Amino acid sequence: MFWSRNKDTENVDTTKSGIREWFNDTPQEYQLAFVSFVSGCVAASATIAFHRRYLRRLPNSEWITPDMIAKKRWIKGKVTSVGDNDNFRVYHTPWLGWNWPLKFRRIPSTSKELKDQTIHIRLAGIDAPEGSHFGRPGQKYADESLAWLKSQVEGKTVYCQLVRKDQYSRIVAVPHLKPRFLPSWMARGKCISLEMLRAGWAVTYEQSGAEYGKWGKEEFLRLQAEAQAAKRGMWKYGALEELPSEYKRRYAASAERAESGIAKEDKAVKGSWWRRLLGR
Image 1 (tube, rainbow, N blue to C red):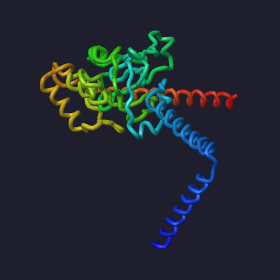
Image 2: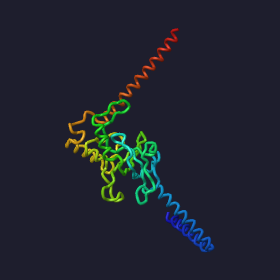
Image 3: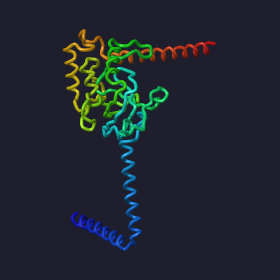
Image 4: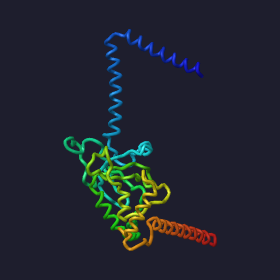
């Protein structure tokens, strides 16, 4: 082992010595060309890395790679719409070009321009009352919960720490508002998930795959209990009739029963057809 290490060191020293001799024996104009080439390669690599990290815009969730999620990367953007009570859409605005005096990029304002150009963000750690979808009635306080979230984020700049991609291709993230006084590289603003719990318009998400950021589940549950005790938001009249998770399970079970009934009916119709055919 020791002999092998010494041998490797000798090989490295020999290689360095050979490169040094070759460089000294090379005419000066070739030396300058070689140094320029290496410097150009380094500068190009640094420029590409800088562009990818700070200047390249991510149009939608399909551009967010597993590596970005694994590193829990932060992205900044403007909230263009709030479609549901615990998620919204963000137009990614990387580092430069969006504000004066270096403003050379613009955020689209029409639905046509924004199509496929926003990242669908699902707030990590919370569950809000379900609104009406696909003919299903919404939960109590769904409208109030949606109104609160819109008042907090719509049209504003947010900072989102990427956590994972869910089954609907939404990006589960820990979202923060822009800090009020300090620049964003020095501090983070309020966490929207925590503020929604504190205001009493959401409950702690406790299903599989739940993420709670640096605070942990205990802090989320503590803020929920605090809102309940203070009768804030949807806790004004006491306990909820049905949690969002219970609502979703109830309708999922209902859909499964409906599908099962349709399948049995189809099977019975087919069996009846064969019996009539054979009877003839």
